[in-house]
Image (cartoon, rainbow, N blue to C red; front, top):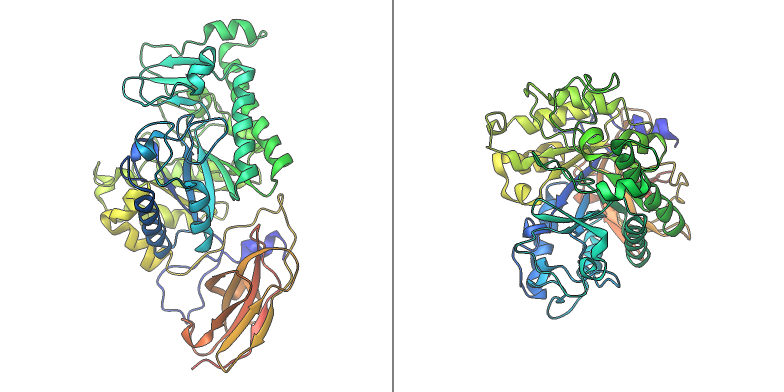
Amino acid sequence: MNRPFFLLLFLCFSLSFPITNAQVNFEFRGVWIATVENIDWPKEKGLSSDEQKSSFIKLLDTHQRNGINTIIMQVRPAADAFYPSPYEPWSEYLSGKQGVAPFPEYDPLAFMIKETHKRGMEFHAWINPYRAVFNLKHSSITSNHITHTHPEWFLNYGNLKYFNPGLPEVREYVTKVVKDLIEKYDVDGLHMDDYFYPYRITGKEFPDERTYKLYGHGLSKNEWRRSNCDSIIKNIYDVIAATNSHVKFGISPFGVWRNKNQDADGSNTTAGTTCYDDLYADILLWLKNGWIDYVTPQLYWECSNRLCPYNELLDWWSKHTFGKHLYIGHSLYKANTVAAYKDKNELPRQIQAIRANENVLGSAFFSSQDLMKNTNGWADSLRFNYYVLPALLPPMEWIDSTLPDKPIVTKMDSTTFKLLNGGKEKIKGYAIFALSSLVDEKLEYATLIKIITADNETTYNTSKTIAPADNRLFVSAISINNNISEWVELKTILR
């Protein structure tokens, strides 16, 4: 089961399955859940702990029904925390006042991870590295917030306060926050979005001239700013490797690295903002050096866009992965805002283009509330078509290529089987595959029909399977890092 095997699994259904869209057995299917300004969760400040918990469970259950397999959860929106942190105060988006714990007090992050894993999903902790105060006029800030204890670390720009990326002590502090997070919590990934240096404000320069004079060391200011972002990414990569090496590190950058008129290696686009020149995020360098495991560019333009066509950018990113995983970010929040996004076929077209490109391994949707609303019927498109059957997360062989032991299967009666972990290593669960009796017994011809979350022991009842009666069923164990074992056939006749 080497890398080619997993690529082969990106094939169509057996024709016996009455599904109109090709099934993908390995695919990242993520959703961003934003907490800043209570965009997605919790929907308002000051909800009780029980209200927070019940609304999060409802959110998870809805996304699970829609086929989502990865939750990208914002847990540090602005130098605050959705968990008890020794470095940063409770987020105001919980209680309504920064530094005040939810009541009755509980650990929201531990709760969210547990509930997410219970449903067989991965949990990627989403942090904002440099935003410190979201709104200088209205944000709630405690007296012991880092902006008060170390005011020399921060710069105001527009209506926000930012960590100064040029200060070594800032990078050390953010790395320390990450280390604490991945040491204490069973997260599957550490995620950052597009906010490195802030988006430009017309007529205003980011006020880091003094820091540049101190630390520029002969670099141009643009080169120096990029080196600062390079440094924080390398620091976080190193601390993940040393602390919890199974944690994936992913970045979701602005969708244009550089335009072709700026760089021969850029995309054939005319974007007014780019990662490299405006946000000082050299994503390609991070991919080349292996400092990140996946990239999820925000391709928030429609297929017909004149300046930044979706398909042009999809093709460009697919050719610049440097062996790491590429997932595409979709802008569900734009539904019905412009003509193209009033077309209910816009999202299906984007997903079809992704699946036609073998270098693209999945999607992420911004944001949760837009899937919950089912605008344009797009949640239904996922649930009843593109994600009608489950998908495993694509494994990353550079993190771990060890296959789990195959499961121990015991027949309990004519249709029920007990499944046990065949090895000593912890596993995520079990994958049930269906295979037409008319084809060779090869995994590349099989269709994933069910994922069962692991516990001490579990069962599978073949009488409830959706596979046609003439199909054979097989089960594999799923490792923590999404490798699958050799399979074991469930010897039964389906009627």
